[in-house]
Image 1: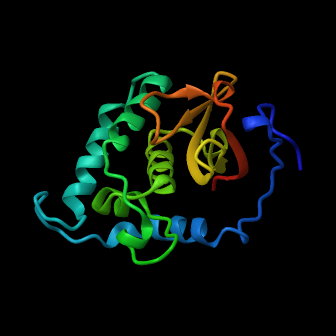
Image 2: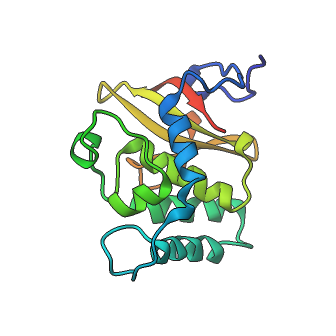
Length: 183
């Protein structure tokens, strides 16, 4: 295993190709790639359907040709408009990792924002190796949290549902990384 060049929040990243320790992430990956079974329905329907998927894809298509940073900022802004809702209320379980489609249909909590941003940027051509969903401890709030980090031009940029802008990870001092994952 080799360490990344950019240590997140004072940590050292050790690469591994094993995802077996992350069943919730594996489940979200599996469901995401199986979302082809969506129903046809109008965009006014309350359940996520092919019309809503077309709207999301249309938004992403509107970003093609924009600079990478402009794409990152637009994806963050677009998805941060969703309503934050905890998993016990939303899914009836303590912790659930939603696919982008589920997030767009039902809103979600911090890792759901990160996952939706991750797959939005993947759809725009950003490689998995340039992104990490980071599960961390917020030292100010004394709680677990999840964000998306995107590596661009030698910087680790943080896309956090709790922040209004994309920020360089080096400016954040109240997060302690627990683990980070991608595909």
